[in-house]
Amino acid sequence: MKQKVINEVMQGMLGCLNNAQLERLQEALEHALFHKQVSEMEEEVNAALTNEQLLDNFLAAKRIEGCSEKSLTYYRATIETMIAKVKKNVREMETDDLRTYLTEYQREKNSSKVTVDNIRRILSSFFSWLEDEDYILKSPARRIHKVKAALTIKETYTDEALENMRDNCEEPRDLALIDMLASTGMRVGELVLLNRDDINFEERECVVFGKGSKERMVYFDAQAKIHLQNYLKERTDDNPALFVSLRAPYERLKIGGIERRLRELGKRLDIEKVHPHKFRRTLATMAIDKGMPIEQLQQLLGHKRIDTTLQYAMVKQSNVKLAHRKYIG
Image 1 (cartoon, rainbow, N blue to C red):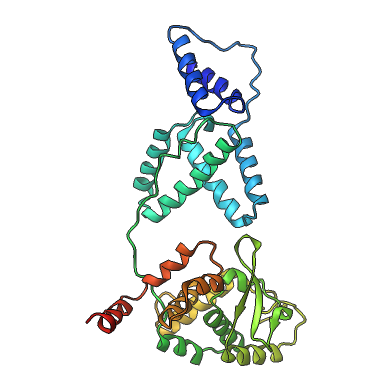
Image 2: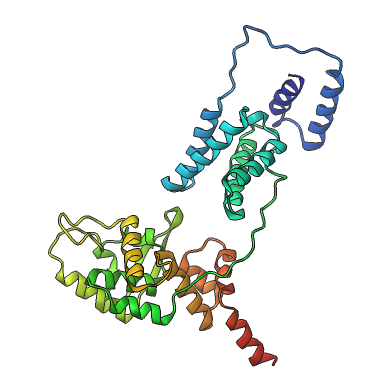
């Protein structure tokens, strides 16, 4: 109870004192209350916001910043799971509470280090927001550092696999879809939002809406142009969507529908792990192989941080071997 009183006093003085003065105040309060008994008045009205209200406010702030509803749903589920496990008011949680939670989560779920670090990032964002909004004095997640995960070589499609998929597409739509993913490197979430009017066939380009509702230009090759035009010519529906279902009522394709279609194609052709993001990774790898500057690739892929783009530069160890032979050996 003493610590709670100290925290409330410190929070109330945040806007009035600098860091050195706050530290001195905290020392004085701890000394003054060391031998004192502090109790709550039974009739005191608890004006503090609940965990649920604080979480709602945090998500509202993230929504204003441009986070997608999918991300917000993931944030809510992650934070609510932590709160239910720790069983404390978030303003009273300490670093050890979060460390223990992450450790137990990894052990119970047998989760990868990447998954645990994603949870850590979300919790860090939440507690940093609480600190910025003066709900807490200091984020308990500040001293929990990034979980280091082993770098793994990401798989890409071979030229043979791409041609095999193209040759075995039974529908013009699927052929156009594969070409658009392979030649633009766009995210599947960006692809499903495209309309027919978004496509500039003359310049072989289109504008997509990426993460955070940011627009960027992507480009497709001549092969994709031809196959996309052939697909659109045979359509009889009036749906503005670029890609629709094969049967009436010809609804806009969703991410799950594309993932399922590609998975079925890969299974039929005995190609492992066929999914939309692998096309994006393949294009990035090919661009790096051919010498595209990393800054231009970052723009093409719509990455906010160049560190994300640099991950693609680690894909092929064979490139390092060839460079060594060229420049050194």
